[in-house]
Image (tube, rainbow, N blue to C red; front, side, top):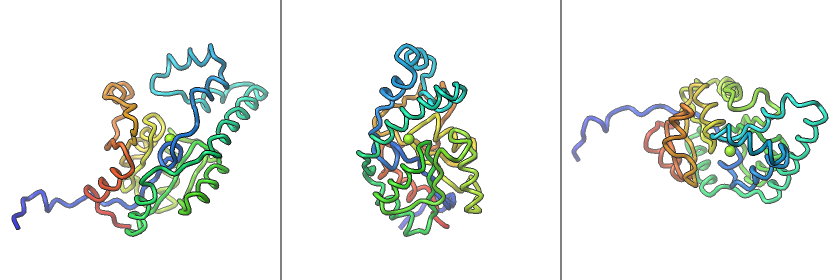
Length: 226
Ligand SMILES: [Mg+2]
């Protein structure tokens, strides 16, 4: 069989994969638009939406509110998240992808802006666990690179040997890039176009439409070695 030079190019070693939870390992069931509307009120929601084309950071938005107002906002958010939990579904391809990682002994971590209760329920439903799994009780949360750097140091692995996979450009890709990891944007519905990447200055290393594409990507482009 003939080989060309490129078939001998060594692949990049990948030692761990860190996943976002909502919309990445689970099917999105939270109506974020309705949630923001309920938290901010219709008028404020419209204003904030217009000035945040890449998405609203609701937690950041309410951080400086008075304790009373903030408490109410958190209750509304929790209520939407609880409703989402009741309908929680595992993303197609998640089990196969994790099976591949397990077969190669590649570490699996999780970072979410959701609460620990949601991560616990996800672990029970999914039947496979992620470690470390950092929820929003870990501060600062995404898009800050701190949670990803924390996972890398727990694993004793360089960020450049890790991939961050998530469905949010402004949270997951931003977190991964700032930490110095590979980034993979899961864009199932074609939400993101080239103008989003240009505007936000956040170009993911890879963009896929499904977790099975992540599976192929990892097999083809990386040397999966713990
Ligand atoms: Mg997400």
